[in-house]
Image (cartoon, rainbow, N blue to C red; front, top):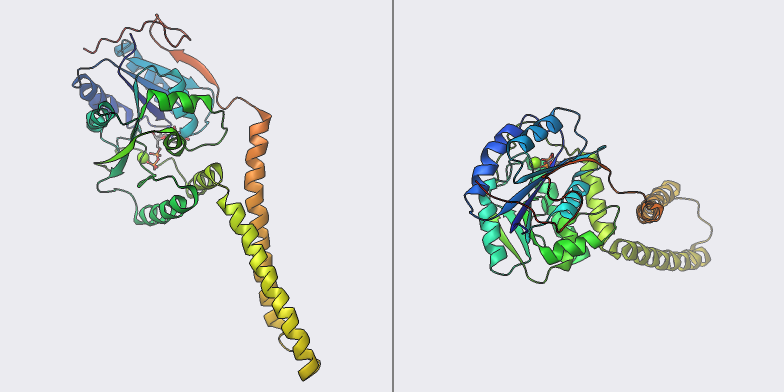
Length: 325
Ligand code: UDP
Ligand code: MG
């Protein structure tokens, strides 16, 4: 029988935090008194994470499965791999760094049982740097406007998804994606709850400013054409303005006569427009690059080892023992 709950946890260089995670996660899940499985996806960690995960697998092989990636493919690819191997009716994603307390999984499950196929979360008191807080608030607002995806707190990855949503996400072959947003577009009855948020227990954030910017580009371009439309509309408005300006200059020429002042103003305007132009080309490139990645049809991730119980090697619906102790 399939378990009711699957917990998917992406792991990238988390050796310092993993022991604590195991210590809190398993009792919390056992306390739910429902069949569950935990899928750890090691995203090509360069530290001892993989060894710690195999060790944990030895300890709880009944409920633990471990996917080892051949290289670092990113958090969202790790989650997608977890989705593809999941069997539960309700799939909960969780960060390995204990910023989302595993004790809250029960509350997500409660909402799922009430019939919600997407349970988002809002961090009660966000424990991140002020810069991250402000940046993410304004990105949230921008994203809500351009994509019509209503996620109050996009940074929090602890979420629950119904089987129907997970299957639909699995059927997408997107090379770049942001899982919560993709899942949101498929959900029939989304909801959000407020959960606690703790400081990172050990290790450091795996996201640099650069990868955060990349992630937000994925969100904008992956779910909306509004940025492109804004650029073309901006171009139209600018051409109209400059046409009017040319008419104005022509009339002025007739009245005032030839003038050669304002050279630097001209430079100023020209460089401003050049900036806009470069941005527009870059934006176009973001879309083209994604199309390029998509058409190459390379595997999105490579799993080199799967540690799981004997009953189901590679099959999704083979009977699975899940006996929470
Ligand atoms: N992660 C991953 N691959 C990566 C980066 C991060 O699997 O390339 C995992 C990481 O181990 C953690 C989760 O994704 O479980 C969130 O990462 P992190 O806590 O560094 O992000 P933040 O909380 O700072 O947004
Ligand atoms: Mg974190």
